[in-house]
Length: 251
Image (cartoon, rainbow, N blue to C red; front, side, top):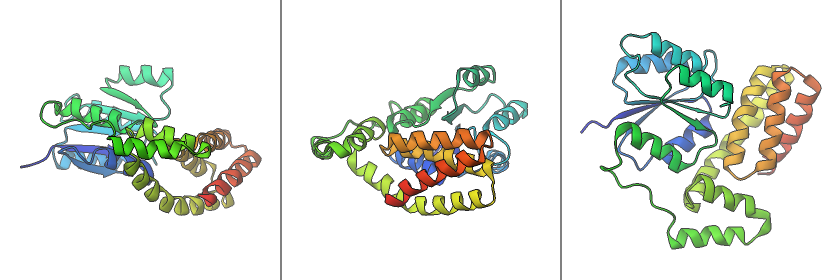
């Protein structure tokens, strides 16, 4: 039996991993591309039933991808597109609606939001049981975490983004901790080279990942870094990065 293919266009490893884990229970084949050219090649190679794309990508953006889909007679209007982004301002939402985007998902989304998106696009609601709320054991695990006031944000993240599944949260956190080492090296290199666009992309991704993991203050710091990098304010970029770097090193 050939599984329906879902194309994820996302250049951030940690976020792609979150989507992969969120959709792991569904009967689909998830194909991950990190840029628009690879995504277009994948679309022309084999049939795809749903596209989930970020807007901020290296090189061409997610908006460029949507426009190329509209201009492609073989694809235009035939494959539903879900935009998955932290930059869904009212103006961007209006633009996406005008470009006939099927669904908008704000980062960070929950595993239930992502599952619902795929189920609706592929009409899986009646064919595959939905993810159930946390079991009593899982809820007890989350409650035991929240008993420590220092970990209240983490418990809230488990409830909000992981449907109360503390085990799924821990598995995702472990994968992110490994990735953070690479992120620190990337951020250091960007600062040394004064490559503020690269630092902005990193900060944009970290803001979502850190909030998903239950670190709202660090997520705000990443957003501040993204803003400073977008305005090319070197001194503030370095200041925010050093603070964010120190936090990542403590995890």
